[in-house]
Length: 203
Image 1 (tube, rainbow, N blue to C red):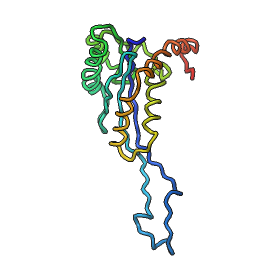
Image 2 (cartoon, rainbow, N blue to C red):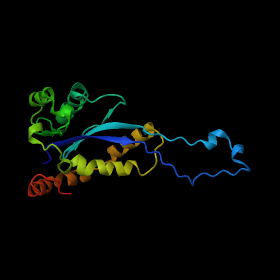
Image 3 (cartoon, rainbow, N blue to C red):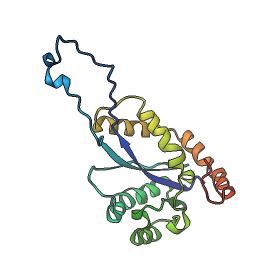
Image 4 (cartoon, rainbow, N blue to C red):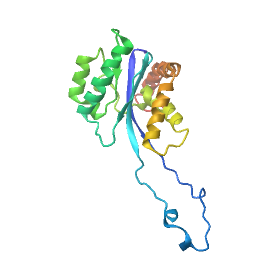
């Protein structure tokens, strides 16, 4: 199991919370309050960014931060993730040893060009046809790593994307291999639970 590289994307968001009881201003009349104090802005779409990450029982891969506005299509995925990160990092972590790359069935992942690229450039990979279409219960990143990372990152409030990105990088660096190996070690048990549930959700 330590030779499987589990990968996934996640969106991190700057959560802006409003507590109407936090700030109070006293005045003889409402008109006496300055306009900038009266008006509390509400944002319909809080700032966010997407991150790609991957782990194995042998090591972590560097995170890839997707710039706002960039569409993760098959060309971007191959160039920025498969070519720049997955292949060289796999070689760094495993050397000339055998390893298997896992990705879910997102459109950019299952694109014919990228499936063919993986077949030519990686020692082994799980084909999109072999991975369940909706399977967060089976991906180490989904059922463990992202949740732990998000909890640690959001332990303090972030008012900007820059602060949030720094926290994500910092906490990713701090993730211990013991924790990762523990999560990877539960994979076979979860596979069996999936089989027992006949492919359905079991959490």
